[in-house]
Structure formats: structure tokens, C-alpha cells
Image (cartoon, rainbow, N blue to C red):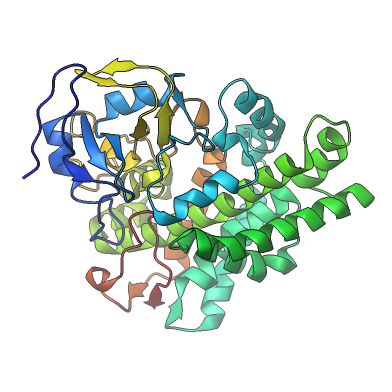
Length: 407
């Protein structure tokens, strides 16, 4: 059992380690449930022996994610690192995800025109076309086949290429480099794929400066970079962030969503009977999988009193979206996969000023990809039982690298 006990300003002993181990391929760590029941804040020990605060309830998570006294600056020496590869973030090219206001808002606004709801809704026909092509690819691969490489990855990969202006002919290169970057066990394993991606994006910027190039990278290079409003290093950092995040998390959600639906045939039957439930289904999938569980790391820049605890300036704060998304105070019977519950208030995309820029795109891709998959392959089934699928490491996104399906 975990021990707890606290008074304002008197720190508890560590109650657990963070990140929590995973045992399910598509669910956040089960260890969160007991912590959430006990208290909203816990002292935890990180991989390097340093201590931090873990936030396990929805109300406190949202309060802290919108608190300007918590910094996302990853160059801060007190920023909490959740794994041995975490030190690499300190030397990565800057991007607005690791900035605070007002710099964060200034650079984020440069990218917003490409991700507005109106812009994304206008992409629906093209995304439907891309998803159909991916279904054709999966069918051509023949049963059984790997859903990840033949369906889940190609859809968001091609979409983000077209938004950024990255040649899809290079997709095998950047998908491989992105995968190695996201799965790296330590900062040494990070070095090679990061260098490959940075050099690639740097060359794309050279191309964009030589001639007009469609997409976000070409627009920023020809406008803000040329006018001196954006540095080359920062443009590379923004492009790296959007390229990797733009296909890795959505591809994982398509894969995980497939497993979850096959494991919940009654819910799948609801989707088959009425494709109109797709938006609610996607929100519940996002809650249930909490794919970017460990993304909410911050460091306090001032003392913060919350939930009977005092977070002191310089202390690390971990705000995973998994426990917030399974908080029974907001989601009764959270272990039940219920597409009618109304899950829009989940924290799968974070909250506050750092809420995911691409959430409208991710939602639309999922709303298109999952119904289409089960329409094209009505007898789809897992070749390996879900209980035998290997969960991803706790310090990376929730994902499955290979999913063999048959039909």
C-alpha cells in the first residue's frame, strides 16, 4: 500500500515512483487508481532519484495546467526528467511547446492558421481519400497483415506531410527516424535519429528559401524567417515538433482504437449500426487510451498552495493525463468503455495554453479512419490476443509497434 499524510508546507515522503509501469497495451497504468483515490497530489521519485509532485485528479490537473506559475521551459535545470533520455530535451532546438508566455503564444500563433477548425474541416475530403488509399494498401497486403505499417501510420503521415509541405516520398525515412527518436531508451540513443531529422528539415528550409514551397514550412521560411521574425533554429524546432507529433500519436490512437473496439464488441456494434456516434466514440477512445500520458511535465517558478499541499518554487510537477481521465469524480465508472458518457472534458490533449495544437486534426483523422476500417474489413480480428500485446515503455507514448490483424 502507498502511505500518505501531509500538512501545508510539510512535504510527504515519496509514495510511488514515476512514471508508473504499464501492464495493458491500451490503458494508462493501473497504479494510478489507488493514488487517485487517496489524494490529488503525491510526492514521487523520478528515475534519477529526484523528487517531484504527481497530480492524480482532474480538477487539480486543470488548475495547475492553467497556472502561469508552472513553467514548461525544458532548459530549466529543475525541469523534471522522467527517463534517462530526458536530458536530450535540454539540447533540442527550441519550439513553443517548451516556452512560457509571452514567447509561447507569439510563436504558436504563427502556426495556428494551418490548424484552425475551419482549415481542418476543409481537409475532410482529402483525409477520406487518404484513408481509402490506406485501406486499399492494407487489403493489398493480404490477410494477415500489420495494421500499423499498412493503415495506422500512412494516414496521419501523409496528412501531416501535406500540411507541412514535406515530400511524402521521404516518409519511410522520417517515420523510421521518428520511431527511433520516440522509443529511445536514453539520450545517447536519441542523438542519431534527432541529428538525421534536424539535417533533413534544415535541407527543406534551404529548398523553401530557394523557391516557393507549399505548406507550413515553406510559408514560415518565406515569410517570418525571411523577415527576421523567426530564427532558423526555431523554425527547425517547430517543424520537428509538428512532423513527429503530427503522425506518431494519431497513428498510435488508430492502432489502440482498433484494439479497444475489438475488445469491446458491443461498442463496436454501436459504431457499425450508426456511424454518427463516431465523434463521441473518438472522445471516449482518447480518454480511455490517454496516449500522451506523460506529456504534462512542469517546474514551479513560485510557491503554489493547492489541495492542502505547497509546491515550492523549483520543484517539478508531473501532470499525466491518464489519472485525470480516469478520475471517477468526473467520469463515473471510469474503467467502463462507454461511448455515450460524454467524454469531451478529458485531458488527452492537455489543457491551458499548451493544449495540443493539432487536436482538431487528430479528432477528424480518427473519426474518418476507424469507421472506414471496420466498414472495409467487417470480419477484422486480432491475430494475437490483446492480453499478449506488449505495452510500450512507461516513459513514452502509449503505443503498439506492430499489430497483426486478419479478416
